[in-house]
Image 1 (cartoon, helix red, strand yellow):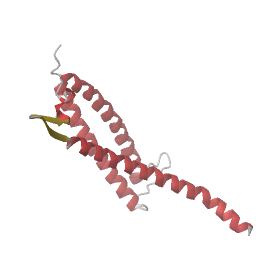
Image 2 (cartoon, one colour):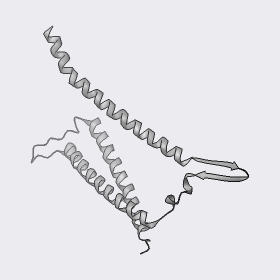
Image 3 (cartoon, helix red, strand yellow):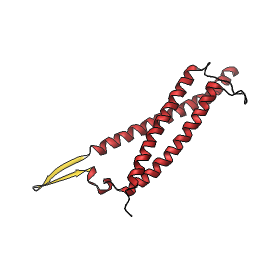
Image 4 (spheres, helix red, strand yellow):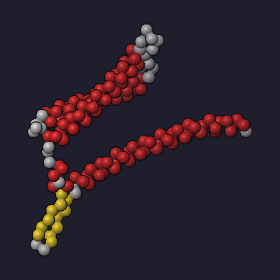
Length: 154
């Protein structure tokens, strides 16, 4: 009987941890879905009404805040530059860890693991490739926002 209680108490933290991780994943998926739904609703939001012969339109893009302003591009440039720097650091760290996993390092005692954990290493390589793809996209965004911010009138 004591053996059963010992096993159940050891499994409880793992079960709690799995519930916590599952809740985290679920909430992140809900946030992404809600963001996409909110964006779609706002982009397709419009209405036309007739009040006594006057036709009035309401559309989200009629707001002056949505017009292009080079000052806003400078803020976007700074944002893109900071985000690109963070992603570049993450890509570099992931590449180093991936290289250690694939080739090891005999000077520090790190063994190569990719010959034993092939699926793990393939998924890690794919993840690093997507990271570099996002880095290239951020680089393009940074360049375009920098060129637009040069149009600021002083």
